[in-house]
Length: 469
Ligand code: ARG
Image 1 (spheres, helix red, strand yellow):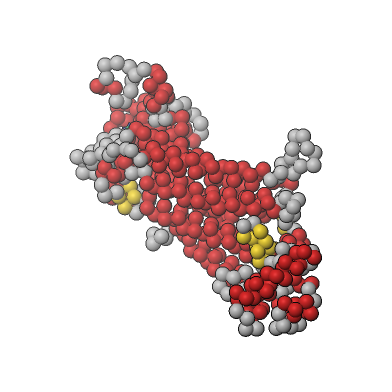
Image 2: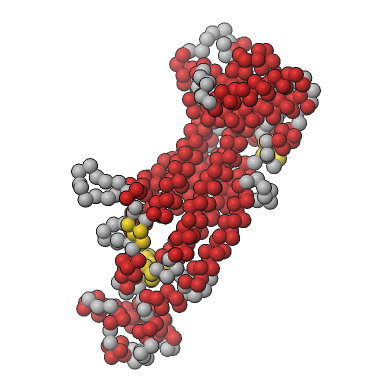
């Protein structure tokens, strides 16, 4: 019999049972559901609603159920609808009528809101941990490549030389913002909705703050209707995850490009590439492609949840049961992608020579030639034009700017002198950009250091130690 069957004269149709049951997916909230129940039971005893003996039996029962679930000894009952009622049913089967007292002063509406917050808080900590590993390993890689020159691109056309280290540090900046967003989401979700009841609060003198503290929350929600109907934190999490996936996807796209025969900048380790069932020569960057592809499903989860929520009147509506699969799928996808990215990057071979060669092609030093003329007093716009004409000559004769003779250069502008050649080598172009945020090797080393410090500070936001986060 259903826990809510009192006012019903008829059994639920089997089709409906099947349709509204969520146990197939919300079973993963069992830890949080039991943690919330344990704290709730202890509080009910403190305020005199339960006797000490009742609390002891309830908690013992819940602990045993927790162990049995963890060890795979529990079979879920579809007709018990969801994780909350499944656990309550198990409890009552095991300890008898006392189990029926657990739900005093509580509704599944505040219960599910609590479970989801607890679940996301834990998963955000795990995800942040994985992201920290990835970001730190990229910083280590960047450190090794502050003197590895490669072409920087705009419009995917060669633009100016940079170091590979500089290019990698760019991604660590994105990841550090992602961490910041996760920390922010975590901070905002870390309030307890328990005590909101079904929607209007509860007539019992619940110790909301005590339960919140026991569960590691920084406070309690301040409006019971919002407490049960707010899913902003889930949307925020998927939004932060979407941005993170976007960054992983852009990195993946570059890995795919760099590993082509045309670029040849990197070679993926055999353990992180796959073959073709027909073409014997193939070595494909499937891992990077899949990360890029999975970004689509995370965006889908974001739009899905936003759409579920957009038309809902206050307070709880069953539509909100649809929040879980979006959240769970996002958590799973993100963790898988982060896990595979770090070793793929760590094991790839960086083909320095191909990168360096690439940096010399495509007139990547043209801006520096123009800047040279500016140094000799020529207005930038004129300098731009003069060098543009030299590029045209080189293009027609298939030469590089640094291979033009001084005589040829002087025909374009008489101010050219011998020192031009040392100023337009790839290395000189990179080294000259020696300011905060520039690609000059010293600056890249400094930005690696600063980023490490920022990461170190941010890592504390995810352990619950640093409450100022
Ligand atoms: N399984 C439900 C959900 O995920 C739990 C809350 C149900 N509340 C209710 N009043 N039907 O949203």
